[in-house]
Each structure stands twice: as structure tokens, then as C-alpha cells.
Length: 603
Image 1 (tube, rainbow, N blue to C red):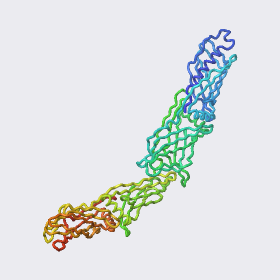
Image 2: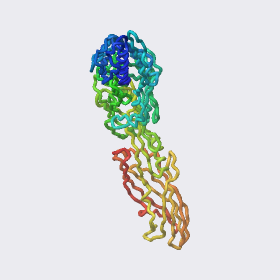
Image 3: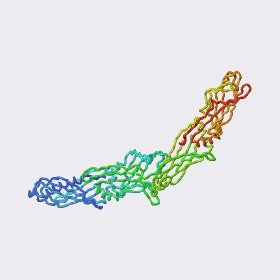
């Protein structure tokens, strides 16, 4: 706030000149020739606050006047003047019997402001766009002269809300993460009356989290030099949706009846006021209503005036912390585990959540609603939730779920279809009910990819087919790929070329295979081929074997129990008919062992 500086002093100068000239021209003094026609001059003007009380504010003006005449001017002059601000009459003063001695004279004028008029002026100042015109209307009365002097007007402006209008760019950090990003803040006055001044201030905030940030009730307090001029709470809850921008708006109303008390504090504090807009969440506890500060929506401003000396008003913002006035729960550690059960497997996650608030604080107990999901290639393995109350210190949450054999088989199908690659995703979220607000508590998510290559050992080198110690044929350019898996089985499409090195025809009757993973037999069968290769000729053979998908869950359990490690053994053989006799030939070059390791769960 700023009131016109120096105007009163300049008016006093005009009055002093006016009154002495009037005195010099009064009555018989001129007819005697004793008084010269030289006009007195004003040498200096000094204004200061007089006595300040709860009811009124004194103004003392000292005018130094030089009377160049050889004789004094008798005290026959009376001076009065009115001080108005935006047509609100603030003060009236008068003095009589003013006289001037030859030489230097000090003339003291005293008046006072009725502090009860401060609210009316304030309302006019706000409604006039924070602009005030200070008007001083003097008049002079003497025996032979009574007239009004020209009014002295000067207009001044203030800009108390300028510090609220900003593109913030700040963020609210909680436990090293951004809870809310403040895009911009603003404030505006409403239409003020004698009793109150509406004040609306708001913040545009962005919620970058995947869960809403909600405040059940927000309170506010506006104070000026510790004089509370406004307080209250919002009537509705405020929610900022996930990954969106919202507005937190507070409609306050200054109690103008408190402004006279503030006015006194402002002057007694060397014309300095600390304007404090405090925003807080309202928490209802067993001990009653408590306030939890929300500094990121608050603002502190210091403004200074220099009313009587003619200086300009200054306003500066005092930095306030961007942290919450409380500590929400935070995640300490996460542990995941698999175990075998009679019905399949079980996946569990243990999360340690710390509530850093003391037992006797408003947040000694915090409600928590949490969910957790684990998926392999979009096949949900576990989806669990819990509702609990967090006490002070460490609290352990456990999310678990039975993973059926059918679910494991569905994952295996997706793994094969995806080129033996699996994306593991774990995602969780929790909402902490703090009584006054619901805030997200993110549970650590994870994205991992693991691969297997169970058919990689299938040899593409030549494989001799020997009968009674003699090579009768060669398998070459052999290849094995997965076919379209079903819930029952996973096809292994086997193909390659067979060259008959003898003159007699040779028939490949069947192709046998065994796939063993950690001693779990996934396949042990023989598939028909029935291709005859003439002597000295090459023919292509194609056949399909199958993994028994009912055995996949047992292998998966063994894989997890061994720390995500599998010892794989794959063997092949062919049954050929040559010279009227069937022979079973082990395909040692095409058979192989391998070790498959994954790190899907950080074991």
C-alpha cells in the first residue's frame, strides 16, 4: 500500500505563504506604512507522524517562514484545511491567531486521521484499481479576508498483487520426485465494500504422476503484520487428475474492520508491512482440527511506504520453501520372490513403506490403498491390492498371488510367438489418505526383457547317417523353428536335406527327439517322415515335433528354484530303412546341451 508522499508538506507551504500575505494586507497596518510590501518566503517544510493510537493518527507539519519585514505580523489569521483520499474525508485541521515575527518563524500545524475511516478509504483504493487521489483543500480566514485556496491534488498507485502474478516454473518436490509442478499463479481483487475486500488467488498446477493428487479441504489465512485480515476454508475438495493440469483456487475475503488495526501496525513498524498469505490443508484428528502447511501455494510479500516524505512505495517477495509442511509415506525397499505350490507357483512382492511422521503428530497414522500388477508379455501373473493403516516408522506390505499352470502356459505361448523374448513389467500405485489430502505414493515399477534360445543348438553342419559302420547318407542344411503354439503343445518344425550316398534307395521313416529341461521332460516322441531318397540323390525332408505344454509349468518352477537357471538337453535320432532293414541312428552332431539363464526378477 502507498499513500501520497509529501503532498501535505507542499500544501502547508502554500498555506503559509497565503496566510502571511493575507496578514500583510489586513486592516490599518498598511495605512500606517509600518509594514513593507515584501512577501514572506517559505524556507523549509517538515512532516512527521504525530501521536499514533488505536483511534487516530496524528500528523505534525512544521513550516519555516522568513519574514523580511522589520516588524511582526499580528496573529489575526486563521487557517483550516481538509484532507481527502478518493473523496473519503480523512482529516480536518485548523489553527488560529497565526503571527509572524521579523526573520525566521516556525509555524506548526497539527491534525489527525480518524482510523475508523481507513476501511472506507481502502475500499475506494481497491475499487479504483489500487489508485488514490490525495486532495488537500485549504482555506484562510482573517478580519477582512475569508477565502478558499486552490485544492492540491496528487494521484498515486499501488500494485500489491504484482508478486502473485507470475509464471512460476517451480515444482513441489517430495522425496526426490515432483509431486506438482506450478505453472503459474495469479491474484485479483473483487468489488470491495466498507466491510470486506474479496481476494481471489489461484495456482495452475500440473500433476505429472499416474495417480490423482487430492486435497479434501484447503484453508487459508491472510495476515498483515500479524494482524489476521482473512481466514477460512474451501467448501469443496480439490483434485488434480493424473498427468493433467488443474487449478487450485481460493476465494478469500479481507475483513476491512481489521484494517485500522493494521494501519497502526504499519506506521509503528516504520511504514513496513509483511503480507503473509498462508495456505494449508485441514486435518481432523483425535486432538481436533490441525493445519498442515502447504507452502507451495503460499506467498509472503513485504511492502514499504514513505508517505510523508514523498518517497515511492516498494514491494518485494520473500522466498518461501517449496516443500510440503509434512512428510508423506515413502517406499524403503522392494523384494520379489517365487515359490512352488501344490497348484502351481506363487509370486510375492514385499514392500517396506516408511511413515516418517511421529506417533503423536497429525500423520501418526496414514491410510494407504495400494495395488500391484506383474505381467509377462501382457499376460497378467499377479494383480493384488491392499488397504491398510501405516503406523509411524517402517510398515511391510505384501502383494502375492497364485499363478496357475494355465497362466504359465499362456505366457509360454506369448514367449514363443515373440521370438523367445519376454517383457516383464511390474507396476504399482498407492494413494495415501492423509485425512486432509490423498496423495500418490508410487511403488517402484520395473521393466525388464529376458530372452531364451532353446533351439539355437540345432546344428546346420553335415550329420552322417551310418549303418553297420558305413555312411549311407548325410543330413545337411538342417533347421528347426517353432510353429504356432497352442495351450496343449508347441510345434517344432524340422526340415533339411538328405543326400543318399549309396546306389540303393533309402527311406527316412521317422524323426525322433527328446527335450529335457532341468530333468523335466518337455518332449520325448517320434514323428513320421516317410520320404524315400533314390540312390545318389538329394531330397528335402520336413516334419513336425511337439513340446508338451502341460510340462511347461513344472519346468518354469524348476527354472525359478534354481535361480532362473536351466540345464537344457536336446537329442535327435532318425529311423531309416535301407536294404530292407530298419536302423535307428543317433544324430549326435545335431544333439546338444545348453545352459539358459534369465534375470527376470533380479535373483
